[in-house]
Image (cartoon, rainbow, N blue to C red; front, side, top):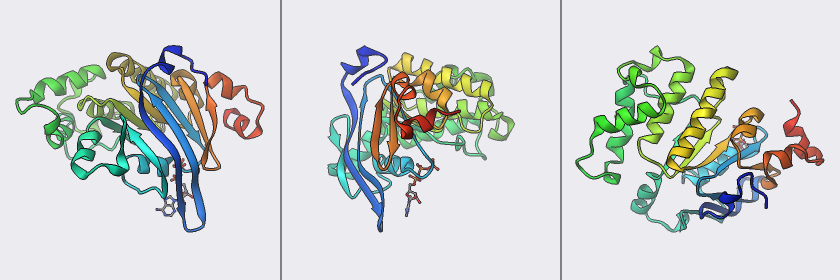
Length: 254
Ligand SMILES: Nc1ncnc2c1ncn2[C@@H]1O[C@H](COP(=O)(O)OP(=O)(O)OP(=O)(O)O)[C@@H](O)[C@H]1O
């Protein structure tokens, strides 16, 4: 298998999905999907609307039970973990949802404090909340917005705050669901640059679901095309974007 960054192929695997199946009645959404995510890798998953990307993510985070297959996060088979072990593992996985999902009635500071309170076990009891909030906002260049309410922020600022809220738990893996959707091209580019900076600074591994070909081009070390319920095509952006397979080609027509 080829990687844009050959160093990544030699790093450990932090997430592995093997032969995942999920059907709803006679609708077979996932038909044996496989995936590997390496430490420090940016892996982009592309698939048409309704191809099963959300179903795959829901199985991955335990919101949905797969019919068969295995999912390992940092060498732990998540289907075999008890609730407490799952909670500990979940604190190492950050999410950035479509549309930012900030709490509207809370200030930026309170939005960032919220996950800290929920996952306090991950840190020692004397955690300096203020320091962590400021540090997370510094990472996204938004310390000045600390006392603002979400409706006082632009779309791009909201996405940044959401990223800061994800970073505050110091996740080892970040799942991005359409990180640039709804943003103008310049703001989208800023978010992509920020994602790259975060990856470099913390050596996080990222799984990025996107329809945005530009985002995939810039950020991906490797890509998977989810077609017909399987990992239909796997490779670098260059490999996939020059493929002669009509199903693959369809993704890169602009
Ligand atoms: N709980 C459910 N019950 C029945 N069918 C479902 C359920 N969840 C998802 N599906 C079906 O599974 C298929 C895949 O849905 P999914 O939401 O994973 O697509 P997606 O690739 O994330 O699409 P999009 O890019 O539009 O978000 C769809 O046909 C959907 O209707």
